Amino acid sequence: YPPTSLPTSPSTSPSRHSSPLTTLVDQWGAHPAHFWLRGQEPARAVEFDERLGVWNVYGHPEAVEVFADPGGYSSDIVHHFAPDLPEYERSGMLTQMDPPEHRKLRRLVSRAFTPRLVAGLAPRIGALTHELLDRVDGGSGLDLVADLAHPLPVTVIAELLGVPSEDRELFREWAEELLARSEVAAVGRTARSADMVAAVLDLSARMSAYFGAHAEERRRRPQDDLLTALVRAEVDGERLSAAALGNFAQLLLVAGHVTTTILLGNAVLCLDAHAGARERVRADRTLVPAVIEEALRLLPPFSMFYRATTRAVELGGRRLPAGQVVALWLGAANRDARVFADPHGFHPERDPNPHLGFGRGIHFCLGAPLARIEARIALDILLERFPALRTDPGRPPVFQTTPEVVGPRTLPLLTAV
Ligand code: HEM
Image: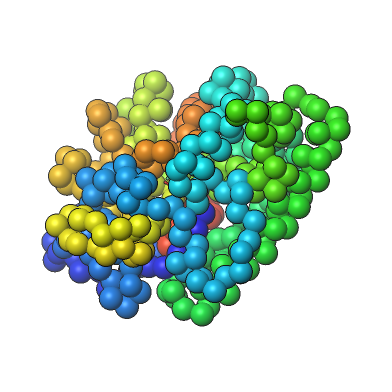
């Protein structure tokens, strides 16, 4: 996922909506740039940030328009942040590709990463969740992130790929390093952001080397895992190069756990703040999938993605020249009152719920079926085993500080009233 900059002075309308969550986010240390979390509306759906030279997109229809037009809005944005960056190995970096290369790679990896493969993981996800919760000392409460929301998806993705899940401490360090880098980048498109891009690429090379070594091993000794499937996957007689495989595997590892960790935490926070929904889902756990979708709308774990205009475009009544950086703020778009009634409220029964938490269009999250199944199973088991689960007033959650992601890094919970 790309480096980041953030709006410094978004013009917001003076009206401020309140809901249980909008008053809590300040206590949790949610990022100041995320004004929508505090119930504020953007003054305009598309706004130019003069200082950073970035077009911020806050509106839902406008974000959908961008997602739907990869020809006009390119995902290949790294050189916009660091124009002097030397060439680097980009094959396999699906999120940064445009058609037609994107289509080809996406088809290829979709052959290996199938919905059937993901559905088959359900029993293992359930067993792992129970195993992790068995280790929790129910008497003194738990930390949702450390005890479940992080170890579950990181173990699942490691097992799926076929790399040792004992390396998960290393994976956690990589993810933290990546998140810390984007925090540094929040100063904007300056020399520091070029340094940061270089540092991310250095980390990326280390991760690629790790996966490259494991993939090489699979070429020699195939196993029943995703790395082997990726080594073998073919489209039109072509296979993934070693470099592409290393890059794609690291994308799966990072995208495959950081966000799911946050999603589970956010779903628990949404239920904690909304007693009505909490009671309804406790009484009827078939509501769990809808709770997950509404949490993805209200607090999308990945809050921002970049595109760059390839030609002059019209968006939200504004005219954007070619070569401009566009920031899509999914959290703001998901609260667009033109699309969602009571946008700051938490309503799992919302139907339809066209949130953008997994993006849209050709880059729509490849891992959405996995994220959904993990979050549903884990939340269901959590509610079954700890029906009285609540946040701890003495130890509030601490949020991630980078503007790219929204959600807790620690989430202490009380298991009994
Ligand atoms: C793409 C969000 C979980 C793998 C995306 C995009 C979003 C997203 C918004 C679109 C990016 C863009 O348009 O530039 C999320 C969220 C998750 C999640 C909120 C969890 C709650 C996962 C998991 C995996 C994964 C579990 C893999 C195991 C990917 C990949 C792409 C992607 C490979 C790139 C697809 C492409 O460029 O064609 N994700 N994701 N994600 N996600 Fe996820």
